[in-house]
Picture 1 (cartoon, one colour):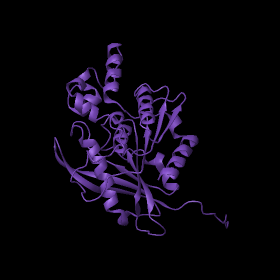
Picture 2: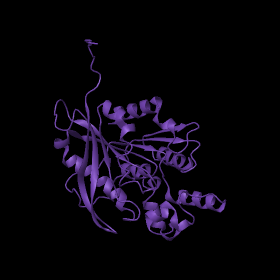
Picture 3: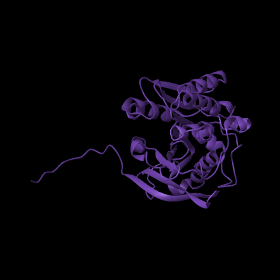
Picture 4: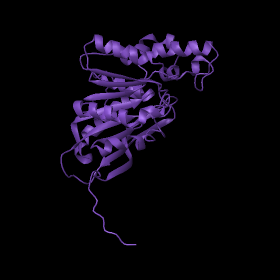
Length: 295
């Protein structure tokens, strides 16, 4: 069979680049490199057109996923690249490697690296956002509040500010999720891998029981850090989430409203933690509209 077709061009090539070292940081096991993976329309070596906006993706996994799993959601984020966004999936130090605030410091270091190397990667330095889910959503809300308190000397000399943030079912208040998990444990429910409070993800993140580190727990809670620098935020949460209860996003929405900040909050009916509802076209449309307006 031989045929001649005329194919209308609706999208450009999308390239995956892995293994970009954006920082090197100490862990309990020694120094290790932190990596970025990029999804880039046109390819990073093709400089046609204007620089592109960049979305930094922060994965979840109970603060355990920020290493080997940092780029596993890239297939689900392909729609963003198809619509002209560079996606940068960033590693961060996980629990067992370093305690808070190492994780948010790593995320902001990645932002600074991308801005510092914006010409190399064809990124518009004025159009950088952060997006994350679950534990990654928790770090996203902290990045949204960025007022410099988590900045370090890594990739120094450039700003770690972002224009907007997208949070999927993230943890806004470490103290409340700890109470939620304590209650569940007392009711005989298993909390992930944890059989006792010391094994809760939030306790391992902080390095001790939450009640022993009240000031750190506040510092680690995005709902407590809303300030004049807080950027516009889109939040999505399922009303059937059994891992991160929807109260987390309700509290954050109310606090942002009270502070007069730009907050868009969508409750997804029937959705559980990371369930298929979050990967449908109507959700993607909301994300694209938000990014298009704010980024």
